[in-house]
Image (tube, rainbow, N blue to C red):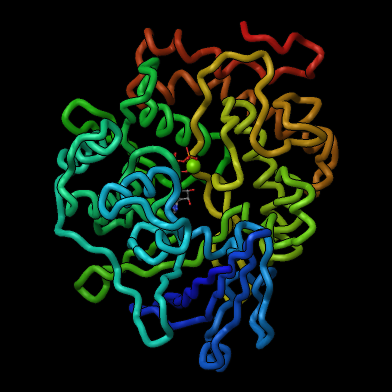
Length: 419
Ligand SMILES: Nc1ncnc2c1ncn2[C@@H]1O[C@H](COP(=O)(O)OP(=O)(O)OP(=O)(O)O)[C@@H](O)[C@H]1O
Ligand SMILES: [Mg+2]
């Protein structure tokens, strides 16, 4: 048996410094790992305390036992580096014990408002580095992917706390904190993936999807898609730039907050719609919003719409709201029917029949759901060429991507093989 202790700190709304919220004991037995989380008395005594997760970790004096997600609360695991960040941190420090050691890196790029230390008196120290230019950061990210030597200070400047698998870093300016998403050296080169992401997010806005703001820049011949962070607020009012944080919970955290979810295993849009409203206080209209988002993902063949590509941001007290849509990138593989990472209705199939099969989970009648599908299909059909042209795609690219925008297949009765 071995155990680790992690103190979770939180940047409360508008706070410059984190306060200690609670303690997590992670105990590894030969049969599995169990976590135990307890809020600190001083935190519980604060009038402005907010729960790390109002469902899995409600404010209270009792210790909470956690047996899923390797004994970690989803809210804490959301702060951890993912594939890309782990690769970068391993280059700085060598391979570490996942996830506790990666959480203790306290990189400012991590999601949400948490920070970590090994003691209640030991304040988390944020990873820092001097500033580098975007061409330097882009080259460093390529160096990581290509296994070339990269200066450790540059590696830290890549902000390995931000999740996801693709190369990226964070850039702060007076408008906000942006995730700069780079091309990967492993991209197949059919079209520029950062430009595809930017254009698809623009098209989403036209379809009534509330997306994170994006912009595209060409840095030394390479496309970089900048995505504005919704869990950071930049305030310039005092004359000096201040960055505040907002708590974030992924859809994975929403699902795993229910101990029974372990036996279900696969998340669904319908479950997220119901639970975000019933359990996390999201406004009821956001169930319709999520439906629209799901239809858009099906329409543009974004089948990589997994549980870390949706989330909630903190609103007030114990209440959260659906975060703006992010990471919407069409999958370029041609299939008659795409199968999504989250269940759409009765199955994961991206078909009209399946989109209509569970509309009531989103508070929609069958006809209302049908009208949303028809609306999105017509906005896409009438506008995708203009939007993509504006985003810098040319005739040659159009031929490579036009299959993305073919009508949503009606049902699965058609062949499942590629065309
Ligand atoms: N606009 C945003 N504001 C705040 N956090 C964000 C934003 N966009 C992404 N994130 C966070 O960063 C993580 C990685 O971002 P993103 O999903 O865009 O990267 P990716 O590498 O393309 O992911 P994947 O591994 O799914 O392909 C997300 O899972 C989410 O936690
Ligand atoms: Mg992602």
